[in-house]
Image 1 (tube, one colour):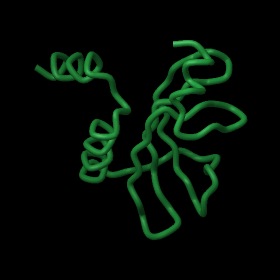
Image 2 (cartoon, one colour):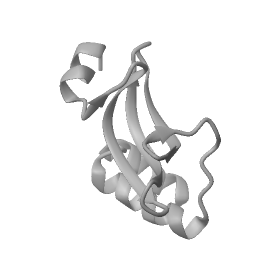
Image 3 (cartoon, helix red, strand yellow):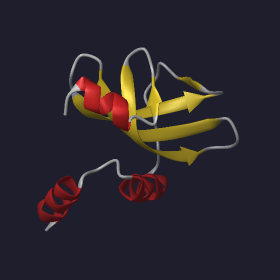
Amino acid sequence: MNEAEAKLLAKKETDYCYVLAQAKYFYGQDNYICLERIFTKGGCEEIRLSWWNKGKMAPRPADIDAVDWVALFTAAIKAGVFTAEEQLGMVRAIL
């Protein structure tokens, strides 16, 4: 994928990247953890885990317990954060 393709597919654009797919797990009304597929404006496609507080990305690690991680990960699969090939690779790695 190149930047022009990412721009066309993006759900959101920031100064840093194009957000291609996103899943959120909410902790209250204004706090959530995101698992996203992004395309950086430097040309890399990446998976980003981030913590958001009151609509702004927090400059701290995102902490999530195992039960909530499963819910976030499931939502990320449904939202298209991971490609079919990546999903198959994860299943193979577990088995």
